[in-house]
Length: 259
Image 1: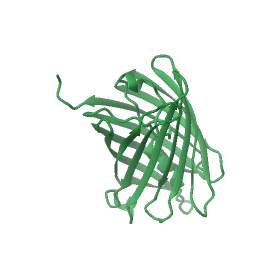
Image 2: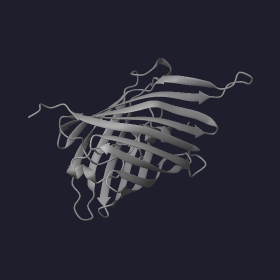
Image 3: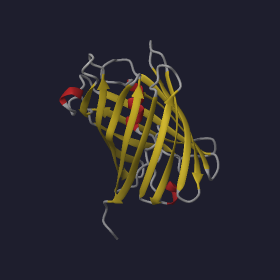
Image 4: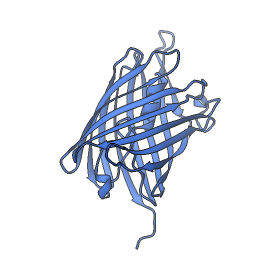
C-alpha cells in the first residue's frame, strides 16, 4: 500500500466536536484532520482503531493502531503511537499472496497549543512525531528516523458546524524527500452525543503523482469520557489507495490526585 495514506491513517485524524469547551474529550480519530485541542492536564487518553485498506488489489490492515496522549499542561501533551500491521505482498502463483505482519516503528511526539480561535483566526496547534527506526518488528525496521510535523487549525462556523484543516510534512524513513500533507474536514453535530463529517485529504511528493482521497464517518459519545466511531473513504486520483474502512473507540481517565 502506498506510504502517504498509511501516514495519514496512522496519524488518525480528529473529529470536529465543540463539546471540548464544556469538558467532553476531543479525539484524534476517526477522520484524518488532527484536532487542535490539547488533552487535559493529568489526563491519560487512549484511542484504539482497526483499519482495513485496499490498494491495487492488495490489503493492508491495522489491528490495532493505538494512540496514547497525556496532558502535561494547558498548552502541551505527550503522544505515543503504536501500530500492529499486516501488509499483503504478491508472490508467485500458485502459492498465493503473502502477509508481512508485525509492529511498525513506534512513534513518539507531542502537541503544542499556539493560539485560541478569535474571529477569522483559527485555533491552532503544532503536532510533531518521529518514528524510532529500530523500535519495531525485525521485518519492519527503518534505516532512518522518520519525523512528521502537522499544523492543525479549526474554525467554528456555527454552534453545530466546524471547519478543520491541516498542513504538514512527513518523511518515510527511506527517502530524504518529504510528503507534503493536507486535510480539509467539515463536521456537523447531530444532537447531544453524535456527529458526522465529510473530508478530503492527500499527499504530494516531488517527482510523484499526487494522491488525493475523500472520506466520511460518524462518532457517538457514550459519555464525556468514552466514544465509539466508524468511517470509510475512497481514492480520488489513480495514485491514491482504492478504499479503506475503520472502526474504533476512545476513552480517558484522570491520573491526578482526587480532591
